[in-house]
Length: 390
Image (cartoon, rainbow, N blue to C red; front, top):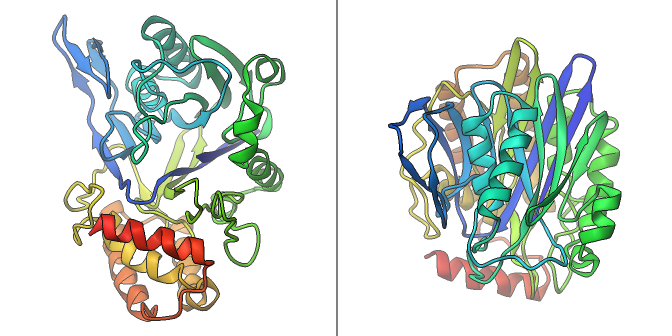
């Protein structure tokens, strides 16, 4: 489950996305340079092998560790894409390109948002969408919707298999885990699953906030919204009803595992990514397609204690036991640091190094032995997942 938001104005575009996946499904920031490929080369995506193109763009991706495709990403031309699982009445095949594959392929092959939309539509028509998309649940499959942006504008692209609808964005627009283009939604949407995924509640929240957003900081605030002072856990779906999603239900195991904000203007493109779960406990660092940063070993679904994702989980999982007590111990410093970086972005490596120092300090401030004030079903959920991570 995810939320993606875009604001298209006269001077440029703001983009933001929370990627919500299984709690131990580490996501990694990954840099790939521009490449030239030999004639006839083949490309292995997550489940399919397809023909490669002669040249691919440099890209920066936020990728679930076990997939070829990505949940969020950008390329050297400023094209930036986020994707959402959408639930339709159409059967999802057991083999095909995943929405994450299509996102990465579009970034590698397109130089504008409009070209990226065309790449996704053409590849979905040629190869089909399908294949396993879930980490814990091997049977979880879905089609995807996308917000595709560049410094000149943005599009919403919604799909159901090989069928699609495209809408040019004017002003603020958000998407969640349900189809939103009216005629296409009437033809294809599974409204029952969309209802249980709380798609309309999250989209209402992000759409309203996006209408007021004037800056990258405002977009970060949208992604951190708990819908109240702290996450509220329902017994079935956990804290799924707000953009800053936290797992802890009997049915659904999603939480925000990566977050991204972009400011796209002609002649000026800036990106900010957490590289970790939970934007409420994380800090957005400046990142760029041409500036790779060493983030440690590639994470997996087991706590390695060294990768950025799992080092942040020490803080995140301790703080969420009692967020009302824990978050005030470091959020003011988080916000001051981000404001300074937004005003005058440091080199990426410097920002990540400073963030590492802050992470260690904040983790020490949070009492890991404090009482867990989440409901009993949420506490049980986390005991099981933490055992799996170990």
